[in-house]
Amino acid sequence: MKEGIAKIGAMNDEIVPELAKQMGRSIRYAGEFAGIEERAFYMADIAHSVLEPILTEDNPHFRHIIKCVAQGVVLVIAPWDYPYMTAINSIAPALIAGNAVVLKHSYQTPLVGIRLAHAFQSVGIPAEIFQNLMLDHQTTAQLISSRAFDFINFTGSVGGGKAIETAASGTFTGLGLELGEKDPGYVMEDADLDAAVETLVDGAMFIFDQCCCSIERIYVVESLFDSFVEKAVQIVQAYKLGNPLDTETTLGPIAQERLANEVSTQTYEAVAAGAIPLISPSLFPQDSGAYLMSQVLVNVDHTMRAMREESFGPVVGIMPVKDYPTAITLMNDSNFGLTASLWTKNPKRAESIANQIATVTNYMKCADYLDPALCWTGCKDTGRSGGLSIIGYHNLTRPKSYHLKKA
Image (tube, rainbow, N blue to C red; front, side):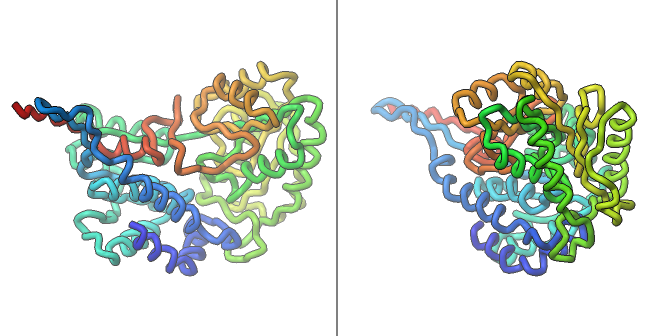
């Protein structure tokens, strides 16, 4: 596994501009190699202890053992946003645990699947153990419904997750689904304001907010609201929208023009309903088609789709809140439950609030980072199951019990 990851790293100079051309991420961000190396190496390092058989009893009469055995054939359906890291979340532990893996990558980033297959096969993993297939939706559904796979890990839209569930209906195939998000940030009165603004705005705008754990709505205690908004606007005004092959570009194009249109529609609807846009279009003359300017909205509320539905683009709404019960209510007013970013200097307070919100990864004084030692999963419309950590191995294996009578 580690040799295969090294092969990917050796291709990074070619991969970075490929990603810029396929999904629009600026080459200034240097690709995803550090992330896939961290995740794959961590999963490799914990594999022995996690997958080791559990001896529950061993005496003159009985030997009882529980083993974690491979699921069989795992289908990994990977998305175009962070296309290497999202894929490796499943590929690495699945292969390490003894599964065969079939990768179906997004049609937006087909070269990623080809690169991954080449890397792993070049270090001796047979093609029948790891292969990349170009499949359309209909063929994928037919394979799933015919029980071609023993487990399926899908990262993508809510609609895509529903299609996977429909295709798998009645097959009893295990599913791991990581779907939509509307991740909130909450800034409390004792927060480090500068750090909170810098991190949350970056979390909302980095690679044009096309990330499954990006910040899409921010709630700020009333006493800090004006200062937060002022600083946020200053950061966004300094962005450069343009060619992703230019190292000066901070915002490249949205991966698909239809996605840019949805973000624009949500923004226009919010403004028509009373939201106030704070970023002037004159700062982003390239705004056209898939090239979408960043926008900060205030005077927003939860009647607006921009504050309730997934945007997946560089727009963020910021609301003042008077206290933490109000903030908790607003953070929970969503069909999604992936991450939340909490800004306070009090860990007990952060944990208490995290206990009351329907999210599964909760950050304090940080955001938009996936620690491979923690389970990556969702609740509500964000999905189910879990990847990475020891939980990732539990989902990619099944328990097998041995009741061995000696006498």
